[in-house]
Amino acid sequence: MIEVWIVLLLTLFGLLFLGQWIGVALGVSGVIIMFAWGGGFPLLGGELWSSLNIYGLTAIPGFVFVGEVILRSGLAARAFKAISPLAGRLPGKLLQVNIILCAMFAAVFGSSTACAAAVGSIVIPELRKRKYKEDLILGTVAVAGTMAFVIPPSSQFILYGSIVDVSIAALFLAGTIPGILMAGLFMLYLAIKSYFSPDIVPVEKPVPLLQAIPPLLALWPLVLIMVLCVAPIYLGLATPTESAGLGAFASIFVGKLFGDLKLRSIWACLQDTSKVMCMLFFIIIGAMIMSTAISQLGLPRQVIEWIGGLHVSPVIIMGAIYLLYMILGCLFDGISMMFMTLPFVYPIVLHLGFDALWFGVMICLLIEIAMVTPPVGMNLYIVKAVAGEGTDVSTIFRGSIPFIVCAAIVLGLITAFPGIVTWLPSLMSR
Image 1 (cartoon, rainbow, N blue to C red):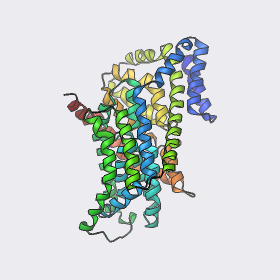
Image 2: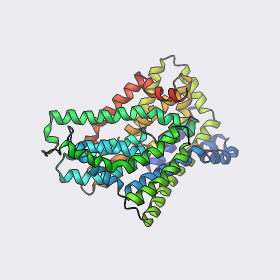
Image 3: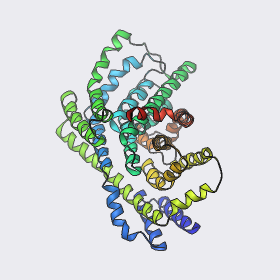
Image 4: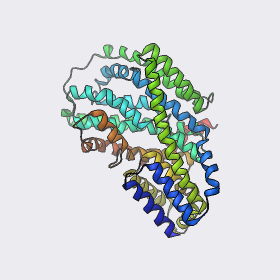
C-alpha cells in the first residue's frame, strides 16, 4: 500500500511546512487516511479516551510543577551561588556550573526546556558579565538542559513507559548511569578544552577550598526535593504519580520556608504547568488519531514483514532507526517524534530481540540530540529567548556541537554495552 504512505507523508509534511500545529497535522493526516481507505472511525473515540486515560501520565504535571516552583522561589539562583565557589576551582571554572546545575535540576524538573530556561536565566547574565566565551556559555546551557530527558524523573521516560507499557520506575533506573556518564563527559570536555585553550575562561583568583565548601550546605533544600521526587519510586514505596505529588507539596513547603515563593507565584506555576500539559495532550490526541489509522490498515505489520525479508543484520536495521531519528530530529520536537514513530519502530525493535528498557533510553538520547539540532531544535530557541536580543541561533548551535559529540559517544557506548542501561533495573527485579 505504497499510496497510503505517499498520502500520509505528503499530508503530514505539507501541513507542517504550512505552519500548522503538530497536533493538528498528525490528527488531520490520520483522518484523511481513515476516510480514504476506511476503518478506524468506530474505534476512534475509545482509542482517544484510552490514550489520555493512562495513570502514568498523571506524574508529568507534578514534576513540571516542581520545576516551576524551584525557578520562581529563587532556589535555582541560590543553587548557582552555592556551587560557584567550588566549581570555580575546576578546569573550565564557572562553565562547569552549567553542567552541574542542569544535572541537578534534571533530577527535579523532568523537562528539558524548563531546565534550559531555568539555568540559562541565571547563568547567562552572570557568565557574560565575567567575560566567558559566548558560544560556550550558550552551548553548555542548551545541551546540558537536555539531560532532563535521561536523568530521572524524565517526562520522556514517563511518556515512553505509558505508551509501550514498560515500568516507569525501571526506566528511571535505566537512565541513571547514562545520565551521570553524559554529565561526566560534558565536564571532561570542558576541562580538556580549558587546558588546551585557556582563553575560553577569564583569569580569576580561585576561592580557597575551605571557603568554597561551606556554601554547598545551602543546597540541602534542593537536595531534599530531589530525594522526595525519586527515592520513593526506587524504594518501591510509591508510584511515579505519588512521588510527583509528594515532590510538588514539598517544593511549595521548601520554596515558602527557604525561598521567596509567594501565593501569586504558586498560581503562576499552576498556569504554566497547565499550558505545558495542554500542549502535550493536544499532541497525544493528534498522534493517537494517526496511530489508530495506521494500525487499522496494518501498516506496522507490513513494515515488520518488509524488514524481515531484507535478510540484513539487526545492527544495520538499528543503525537505520538511529538515522531516522536524527533526520526527524531536524523537523520535529521530541514528544511528537515519540508518538509518531513508536507504533512503527517499537514492534520492529522487539521483533529484532532488543530490550525495551534499553530502547527507551536510546530513544530519549536520540531525542536529546534532536533538541539541539536545527532547524527545530527547541532548546536552541529556548536559550535564544533567555539570552535576549542579538543572540544568534548559529552561535548557540556552534557551542553545542562538541557536547552533541559527547552525547553521541554515550549513544555508542550503550549500543556496544547494553549492560550500562540494564544493570540497575536488573538489581531492582531481584
